[in-house]
Length: 183
Ligand SMILES: CC(C)(COP(=O)(O)OP(=O)(O)OC[C@H]1O[C@@H](n2cnc3c(N)ncnc32)[C@H](O)[C@@H]1OP(=O)(O)O)[C@@H](O)C(=O)NCCC(=O)NCCS
Image (tube, rainbow, N blue to C red; front, side, top):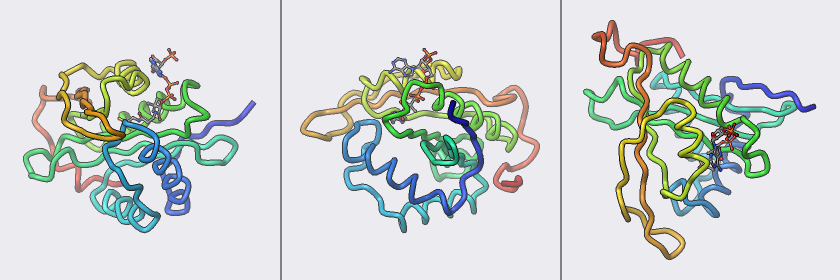
């Protein structure tokens, strides 16, 4: 029986994350990137998220990184500062074993603890049943579809927007700015 751990990402995990994402870029439609970012670019993105106080987790099986999830700014303009957009990617070999769900649950809990109020998933490809399914299981509501906004692998692709309230949502005004919260 393999032992699963969900823990904060360290810089040493980034080569594994880079390889996981490279596969998703080259062979999948969940992401609309066309050229896989290299380790230097993945490190730049990680550093930006850490500097901004955003949560970023890896899943390990017997100590080996098999997936990751993070929350990032939904949009850069400051009135969006209580809303995050999430990403979650796993090695294909370990899909449908509950690991994506556990990563997302940890990401949601930590995002709530940091004071964020809304989480948005922008899911590439309306045929991405795995992503739509895991977000639904995490309590995301379907917002709608942007039809044919992407073009990858010779075909037009939709994005599916899903959204989940975090913590108090809009029921309470924010006490402080989560960007100032501890990582
Ligand atoms: C999407 C992804 C993270 C899901 O992670 P996962 O570990 O495979 O999913 P889980 O095993 O945790 O599934 C949890 C629940 O989500 C739903 N689900 C997962 N995969 C599904 C699928 N292929 N079809 C329908 N529902 C699915 C189910 O409700 C499932 O619960 P169940 O197995 O008890 O029925 C993973 O498949 C992945 O990395 N896909 C490629 C990249 C990607 O699409 N990332 C999301 C970008 S927005």
